[in-house]
Image (tube, one colour):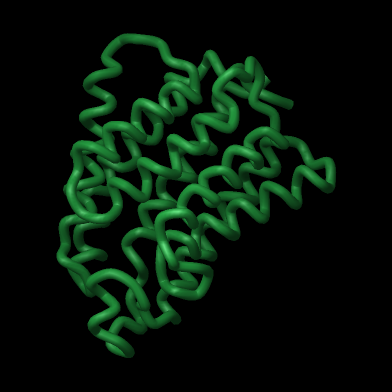
Length: 212
């Protein structure tokens, strides 16, 4: 199973829609131990990308690159550079590919994580976006190694991302504004890990809609 890189538009719009629909939710979560602007900033970046895309078609990789550029350059806070880097590195890993296979998608996610690790010190267990992205990546890589079909792998990735997101409730924040709270950050879900879960789920659903 695979999907055509050229069929990127439905995937990207699914991601834009998911962030927009969860703007308030992300802001509310961020407000518990952060400054409350995560939903607003993310929505601004994704909606801006969607408006610029307009009625145009895009490949999946070009769309990720363009979205990454918007997030990197035009939204506030730390998450713009973080998501911008992830998406742009993912795009670079498959920019010239005609077909996106499960194996190639795993390579894209790995490139995104590697790019992230190049700009942040956070690792699994630190109550950040990493706690969602790493289990999602590992699930995709395992499914590829085991010869599972792409759709099954995406469903398993969605479950892994959600479990990773929920696991941040039991962690003490070590980075960002929440780190100032120390033990008081326990019991609250991390906003970055939450937006990452929302985005990965939307990405998966978009991919499934164009799968061949």
